[in-house]
Length: 106
Image 1 (cartoon, helix red, strand yellow):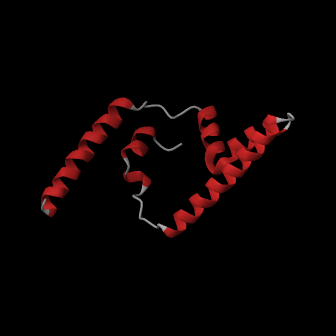
Image 2 (spheres, one colour):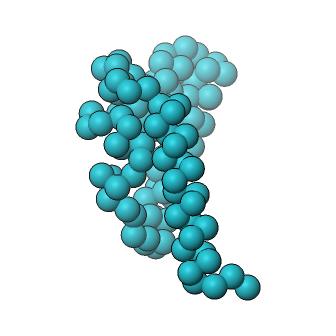
Image 3 (tube, helix red, strand yellow):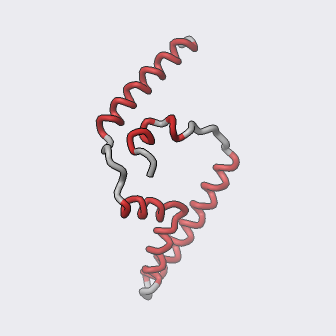
């Protein structure tokens, strides 16, 4: 069994390695506006509901697929929100995360 000090050193070493990878691999520039817009649209399933609405315009199997997709988005969103409330965990501040430092504020 590892000691607490040994575990702390292990995580410290892993954090240093991760920071090195992030600084080496991530672009230095902020992401483009279209990429940020698409990322924001995917939150909450909005992008997928738009895709389902586009499918619903066509009759037959596409409309059935749109209905199934909308039901899947609703179920996934509901389960995610429920689990987020039931399984509370503390998250580190964004300013302390290497990716935030590498990307800067968007």
